Length: 257
Image 1 (spheres, rainbow, N blue to C red):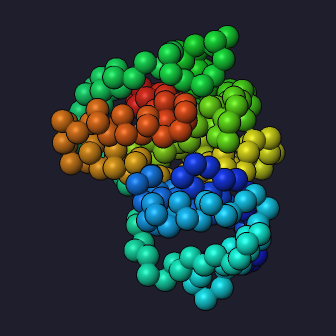
Image 2: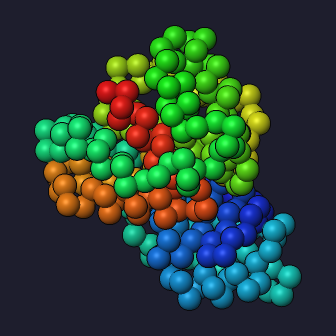
């Protein structure tokens, strides 16, 4: 599972925590939350019990398909051998079942200006226009430098916008996808954001996403129009502004088409 099997608890949330291994940031969350591309979900009760004792800095060992967490009181164990694997590869979508115009129209349920996480000095439309105009390498790099790490929180808003946009461009096979992937990869190597954001961006570059994003894309695949807005609202429900920021990136990608 991991090339190097020693890690530490890096962040603790209300319903989950992250373990930082040398080559992966591993998320342990409750089953009622969205599954991350690099992590697991276990029962809500199990997570609640763990969160009473785990703390930032606790050592973690992965061995024999088990996570051993060395808390201040005792050693907590999570077995991953009996968990079901979920395919979180970004699925390819076309607009045969769900017309592009209907998808874009469905995003009207979101008030980006009110709910997004970037400063009032900018407007969502400013970011949309900036990405639209990034047709050449220099423009893409300038846009990514503006967005990367911008905003507060464990996943800054600019990074969420990048992840949302990249996920959709990957799903639809955008003609300039390779150019965007190369530019994002170069920006990722320069650093300047959080470990959590780096993990999400890296997963998107590798073609993986969250369970909620996969669910949204499958709605498009099947043409279940009635479920489109509820799938969008499901993504918005993630984090304080992360969901809305991710949706802005997704919306931008669709309008680029």
